[in-house]
Length: 188
Length: 175
Image (tube, rainbow over all chains, first blue to last red; front, side, top):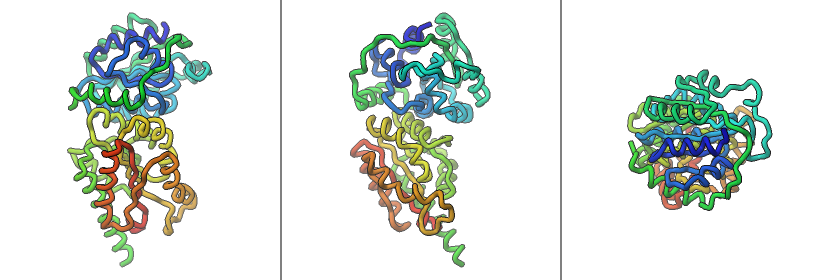
């Protein structure tokens, strides 16, 4: 499965829910699929998607969805321990794992070898962890996760490569302002 | 005798910091544990009106606080000044450009009473590091200034919609 197809299934699966998206091509691909106020596109701070999602999940009563990447979560593995310990019931963390640093030239990550991020998440204390390889199961597992208590970590194995998509034509401040407004109805 | 007064000062500074954060309306705190801020952290942990999360690293704490802010919380981050080194990228490419009004409360090691040589360089560099990424740092000189300084920092942060730092030197804690 291509990452952009996984992102399409994710955004279609979380209609009306906030979605935090990892920086670089993943955010650009998501943007190209149809811009929404509920998309928080990261333009920097690699590694922090899951942390932003964790903080947001404490502040909101709705489910919070994060589309992270393998290279990004590897930069902030401590975050999995913090999520495991904090255990927010409304957090769904998807890791789109293409076993490479896709935005910087496709260099391999540790998940191209023996590292298994679903097992890492499990060992960090996150009980609900899944590993997905096709679109059908992604749709089903995401739906189940959104209907049940989390936190959930879903590792989605995707192909290497980026779609040919444009840059995001929004300033960080625009992204933030409309996102804050859009999620305000979910305040806990 | 000297030890007793240093303990009193430690408690006074800790209480002043906690009460200022509370009366400014901060209702979310992420932090990386620190020996100078330990009482402040304990008071926050015991306060059911302030949600708090212990992070494994300072940049993670900034990410978590940013998320809480996006969801409508008033968020502060507590850390030792050495953690600023771990935070620069998160500040420069998340909190500052997205205009996230976080209050960073940093204890500062590396002063005259410092016994650990590895604390000295960051202790001296902290203000220039903050200034170099365009961040304003507020610094109370005496325990009785803490309350007002935190108020000023909060006001500045809210008005500019920008992260700011409050530096609490180890001397304020009687160390």
